Amino acid sequence: MDRRSLLKAGAIGAAGLASTQWLAACAPAMPGTSPNPVAPLPVDPFYDCGVLSGIHDHISSVLWTRVAPAATGGPVDVAWEVATDSQFSRVVARGTGVASESTDGCVKVLAEGLAPGTIHYYRFRTDGRISRTGRTKTPFAPNTPGGHVRLAVASCQNYPSGYFPAWRGIAREDVDAVIHLGDYIYESGGYVPLTDVRKDFVGPATDLATYRAKYRMYRTDPDLLDAHAAHALVPIWDDHEFVNDYDRVTILDDPARAAAAYQAWFEYQPVWPIEGTQIYRRARWGRLVDLTLLDTRQYRDEHPNGGKLSLALTTTAPADEVARVGRTLLGDAQRSWVLDGLGAAQDDGVSWKLIGNQVMVSPLRLLDIDEPALRALQPGLTKHAGIYLNTDAWDGYQAERDQLTNFLYNERISNTGFLTGDIHSFWQSDVVRDYDEDFSPVVAQEFVCGSISSRAADFLGSLADSVSQAATTLRPSFRYVDLARRGYGLLDCTPERTVMQFRHVDALYSESSTVNGSRFTWNSGSTAPVLQPG
Ligand SMILES: [Fe+2]
Image (cartoon, rainbow, N blue to C red):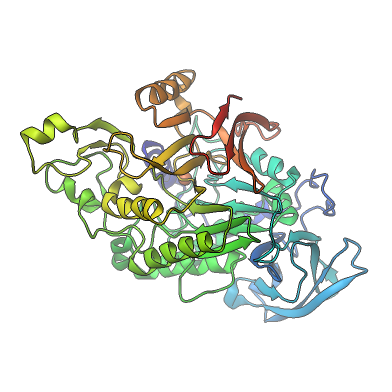
């Protein structure tokens, strides 16, 4: 959080840079280095943001590109085709989309009638110009038993903070899709001397033109474009797609800015519109994986003390607001949808219930005041009383978290895993029904999967490893903490087990290679994944 403030402060100096300046950075980039079958063409300034696909359902994929000239010219028809081979000799779907100024030149189409569980190749054609070839894979059909799914889990890719060797690593992975947990762009921008490695030429995003310019700037990165061409993306937003640490009151305070941020997200992300600005949705791979994708931003109640309070002592008003029953992170409609969907997945016999979730579920309580001796002295003590480090996370919405963990326990929802982003570090922990109850049953696992480039406590240098070690010693519910490294998670699911492999890069060096970090083997039905240190 301090880091965010630092970046924000640094961004001020870059305010006002004309959006045309970054266009110079859109020059053709180095050819991709991915060994996957996607043609490693240089970035075409005509299709300047590459190609991208999104998971829709087992027979449909969302296909995306941007036709740069259409952003300033009239609408143009863009033909698309999908084949089961990279030479396009077996075309299985084709159609025409439209690129226009009204969508900043972005084209998004839904390719339907595809084969389930199948790799497809796609490309676009406009005025005789052919885009690079993208590769995507449909999930297998909902009732298919067995199977094998591999998913990369990414988040937080602050452009000036680091390069994207993590995306180069993801491009080379053999995965079915990439889940992105948000902070795909950072609305702040500029250049912070001594810490940043490259300049954000757009500066702070505050309106539609600057939010759009952010997506275009991020998509000048050849490693990001290679990864997008290689794998389907499953994105949700976090806070920085709009503004740091926002809540629903922030939206009410500046609805025009929020609308601009959301419009740009929907224009640039391969997600088919649901209803209004809804992004929470679900994906399913047979009876193997049910993936719930949350929106923990736009419906959440206001942060205590107007959003300024990260550290909360939950024994005194107004800080004990974070424990108030009825306070919500998800909003009523989304919470009902989440609980219904998890119940349905359990009823359908789905092996793994994964939840793509922006902010950490596991409590980061620095001091536990909800102890039997203290409660005896003060019977009215707030439940879960203590000092919390980050009330922007589920710690700021404790009663709703209890509702969720009790549901998982009461409904016997098995093999539930939260995949979490936001805090730029790697964590693994048990999620228990009630963390103030002795021997409380484990109801889920949580994997916080690092960051592509955004930094956390790595400025502490070698001390970061000591702090990480201290965190696991002081809070044994955390099986693993790594505050020092960047990277992503790689999830490998079969009916028998799920393995989470943390992968690390040094994002300060563009040529950094991916190295294996710690690995967790989670057998079906087990509540204690086995840690193999990296
Ligand atoms: Fe972030």
